[in-house]
Image (tube, helix red, strand yellow):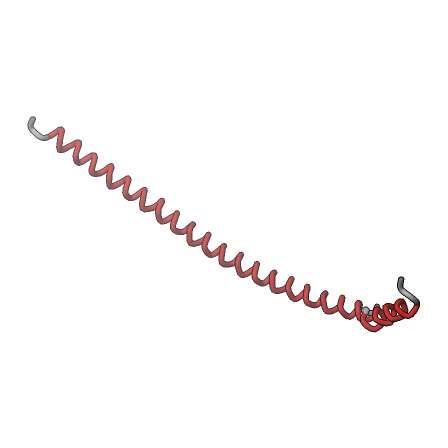
Length: 94
C-alpha cells in the first residue's frame, strides 16, 4: 500500500507537470488563432475553387451555344442537299 510519502510524491509530480488555468487559457487563445487562420484559408480556397468552377461552367455554356449554332447550320445544309437531291431525282429521266 502507498504510504504518505508516495502520495506526496505523486501530488508534487502533478503540481510540477500539470497545466495551470493560465496555461490552459493561453493554449485556448493559440488554438482559437490557429482555427481562425485555417477558417480564413479554407474560405479563400473555396472562393478560388468557386471562381474556377464558374469559369469552367461559362466555358461549357459557350461551347454548348456554339454546338447548337453549328447544329442549326448543319441541319439547314442537309435540308438544302435533300431539296437538291429530290429535284434531281424528280427531273432526271427514268
